[in-house]
Figure (tube, helix red, strand yellow):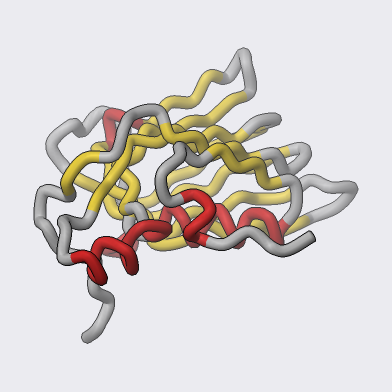
Length: 158
């Protein structure tokens, strides 16, 4: 048995589940540089579910796109966090459909008995902190890939 590679998912939709901090680090890598308007943030208190509809850069296909001289791609994905107790945000307006937020990373800060905080860092000093009873995060692609509007790979060089 071998570990999965980015190339394994190059032409198929992603569906990943994170049940521990190591799993979440993998999900974080796939959603790095995902963009979304504040209006695509949903928290269903009754269902105890928090969700984001993201436009995810397809990191798993970037090397292949560059090597073949074709356009970089994005895909719409849903990021769902289960067993949510509370949601806090800084620098984020969930009613604002005009401001585009950029997701930089997701980490899990455990507290006790499997509970903890899923912390999402956004560009521009924004953050979302989701308190959970247990870590369960699902990332699922929900559309076919499309050409990245900028045509560029995200760049973090200063």
